Image (cartoon, rainbow, N blue to C red; front, side, top):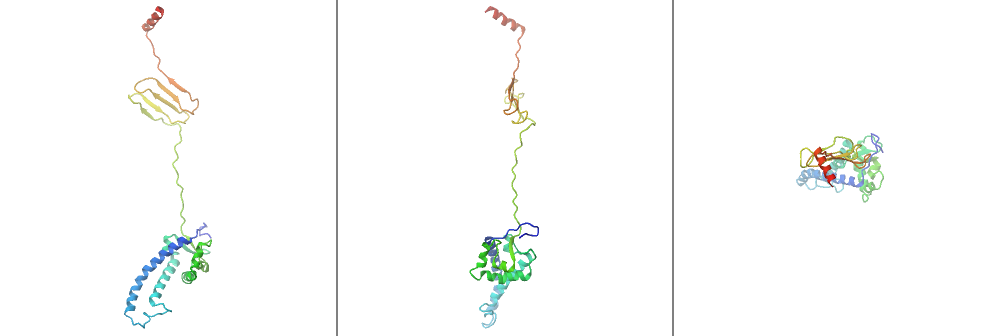
Length: 245
């Protein structure tokens, strides 16, 4: 079975329909007391042999008939006009026709009265069939060509993780070296095409060490050192000492 948009539908199972029915029974039972109180007061002031106090249909009194009709009207009218009772709406369920056409009033009335009676007449076997049937149908659904489906499908959106930024060429972070204002540590993220580490000796203008990161092309350590120069007097003094020895 497909809906009007051509998407595959999901049938409501036994447990979710039972939960919706329990909610509806609580609502109808609460509303029935609103009708019972005035009718009970009317029966208290009526003669014992009147139709209000005695049985009208077999052993059922007027109060029983009014309460039953109110409950049947609740299930019938809400299902016909909105496709779902309050309990079904809370459970995200909806009653639809088998072929996708609109529900008729006779179809819904027969389903909610005679159909429900037949489903529960023999150990509620008609309701238990909902858990067995592949389309989750009870006897009242089968004889009335109706299905109970989920009205709206919950769409699961996958959570995307933020991927780390790939290492590459870019501005190199620079931090002042501890112990002085001049020396700077300059480091580039490893893995780039020109991944180089440059570090100056903390505390002064000493030699600058430049090292290429592991894994980069021609990964060879390089070291630049300062060249010390001597004056002519110092060179002559050193020469004299060598001659003396």
